[in-house]
Length: 190
Image (tube, rainbow, N blue to C red; front, top):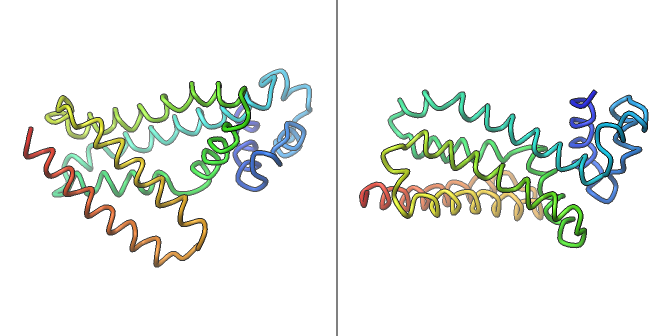
């Protein structure tokens, strides 16, 4: 039942946005009673942040399943950047952005998101450390991971204005090329 509620929450966030995601709508979509929903998630903020936490954990599992392939790659940095890009595609990222924006004016949601966001971010950092353990101790390693993550997120958010796939692909190709320069400099300095 929890999983159905979490999946229904993400679907509602993507389809209706945060304002249009109500606990009643989520319960209906999940096929459960409102009482059952309240039993598992007392508030809307509890429900939506639990959904994002759940999906971030799933995203981490997907990434870690790729670690051996990436370590064996001729281009582990480029392939890792591409995987980061792919992990930010789709409904999980859209739902997360809905919550980031809504948390600006909703103190309860902001409190919940401030607890969830570091968990989601740390999973990408841990993935980077597992992929490139020889460089993980470098003082610029963590900032480089954050820069890559911020770049991916920024490009994807900006792309919603045009929905032009060719432009999106070109922007990512350019950014990926520049991020590789950043990582090359980091790896050479280690």
